[in-house]
Image 1: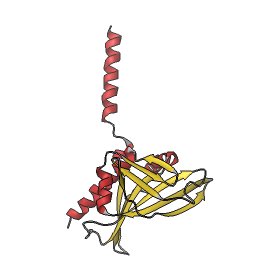
Image 2: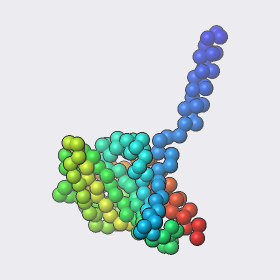
Image 3: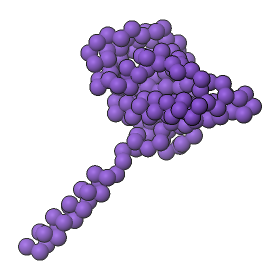
Image 4: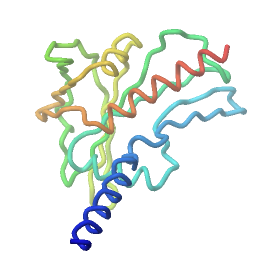
Length: 183
C-alpha cells in the first residue's frame, strides 16, 4: 500500500511540475532592434535565438507559418495604426507557391479581404524555402490577434493558424503597444 501511495505522490508531483512548465512559444518571441546608424527600430520574430528558430523550423515543415514585422524611424513609434508586414514562411522539398500565392482568409468563419501577396524563395541545403508576404492594416492585424480561429488558403494549400502563431501575434501586438506607451 505504501508503494502505491508513494507512486501516486510522485505522479502528482510530476503532473504539477509539467503543468507549470511553459510551452516553448510562451517564451519571449519578439525582438526589438534599434539601428543607431539608420535611426530605425524593427519588431520581428527573434531570429537570433537558435533554439527558437529550430522549433519554428519544425512548424514550417508542417505548414506555412505566419510572422509579423514592423519597422519605424527612431526608438519609439509615432504611428498609432501602422502597416504590419506579415510573412508566411514555408520549408519543403518542393516549390509550393512558385506559381500560385494568392491569399484568402476566414477569421472566426467570416471572410476577411486580404491584400496582394509577394513571393521570394530559394533552395538551401536541398530544401525549398519560400516567403510569401503582404501588408495588413493595424485594424486587420488586431482582428487576427483577437480571433478564436483563423484559416488561410494560400495558393492551393489550406491551413489554420496554430497556437504558436497566435502567441507570437498577441505578443507582437503587446510589444508594439508597450512601445507606444513610452511616448
